[in-house]
Image 1 (cartoon, rainbow, N blue to C red):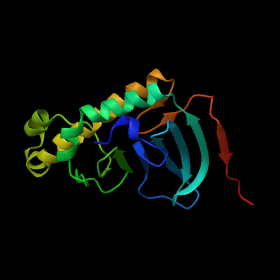
Image 2 (image 1 turned 90 degrees about the horizontal axis):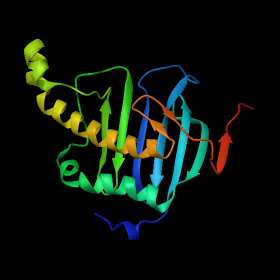
Image 3 (image 1 turned 90 degrees about the vertical axis):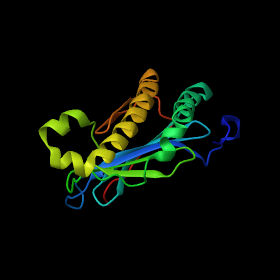
Image 4 (image 1 turned 30 degrees about the vertical axis):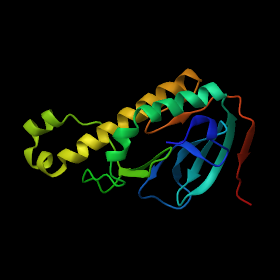
Length: 178
């Protein structure tokens, strides 16, 4: 893994993007957050079909950025084992895309925390088909939740479905229809 001191403005430390799989052009299209090595945190909201609706850029301190970096560094071995595509059998709802420094993007549909033992009792067929995927999804969510706790200490509420940023953004841009 790249040393923290070697990070720069072009390196993504962490990013998350979610949006609906289906919708009408112009509908709400989800959001993304992206933390760069220099502490810039970009938050975007989208209209369906990935048109940017708004963008805000925040500056996180070196210490705040290092908290996220350290969380990912601690999970490095775990992240290496997780496949790029996770499949829980879902075909509608929301996409989830994660990027962790030094690792491939991880893509999923409707990622969710699972309790494999409970699924084994309640839906053995699903368990047999998706048991490995449930483990991987739980690992990704666990790492994501640790990162969310780091953001929360900085006044940023991040979850799989929503993001509420603090008010001290450095740049705020909103696209309007002509």
